[in-house]
Image (cartoon, rainbow over all chains, first blue to last red; front, top):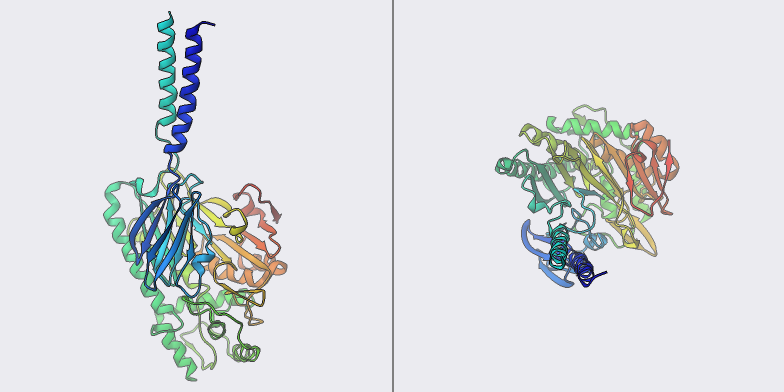
Length: 119
Length: 356
């Protein structure tokens, strides 16, 4: 094996490794779209953990983005159906706090996409 | 020679990088799909979405107009069929409460009759006159949930009124029947979804999904592929979000579950689906999903199966003509009819018992 062979192998290995690293990091984990009173009020990437307060009719709905997922964590509504919706991670999945007029929908996530969820 | 090898290696490296970095063709994000229009709004106490697959991007303004018309329809339908408040059904219920008989307006007669037919077929497991009990439990208020069950004596008197009331003869009159409140809560969303899809078809949109809080139906396809629907796992917080997915044609997928509208009292879960026989929330199932061409039947029939429970649902499903059903019982056992099992893609790790 010549030095050129080694160089070629090293280049190939680096290219393959680099391609994988770049592919995974550049492929966003998706976004959550947030609506309040039927208007789109925010769109956040799911690959950055954060807490979001969304102002609705009754007060602030608290959302949490964590590890590529999102859920309602607190809500001023009396029935807490939005909290029962749990963690969302698939494109097409939705949850809503109807009393507060706040809803979320996931788009472009890594987890398998569906057009609608029967629940 | 060496140069040529390095050049070849660089070319190869470039090829690998290009392969790795080119845009992937996974399902594109909705907003990136020029042929999908999606409109969302809150109506009938839930999140409603209308998705339309367009033949060409030029159809988008017309589709948006059609979806907006569907939204207006949902608000009108909600007001007309709300058992309480100031709409038509609420007024009829007030008349009944005053001890008088009612005249059912002709546009409403078809759904009264349909609901009654399903009630009869289901042996009363689906009961459209259950409004008094629903209100007694506090499940009529979409904004709040009760914290404790009502007094047994009050449940018994509501049941007694229901049992004493005359059956509906599918005419334009009903009553007098004091203590009876018509409540189409377990059929109205299915009926609204069916009607919304018919309206979209009239407007020329034959590829669509209308989803009223997970109570959904599809028509046509999403372009090259079928519409793909997931069924939520009733205990999603413990692991898998979805029980299964399936591709649908002109069909409704309707799930009744104990996991969204419920309260807990002394360690016991009380879900919003009441058993009209006992006057208390049905037990035995975490969820029941029905797939059927008719969204109205899928909705009311699914409620009846949920009430029937793990022992009796299969026989009742045959009587109702529902052959595509998947249930999750209180022990987490998943059971599917053979006809539905053939097309369900269960989430890895989930196994289903198959029944004929």
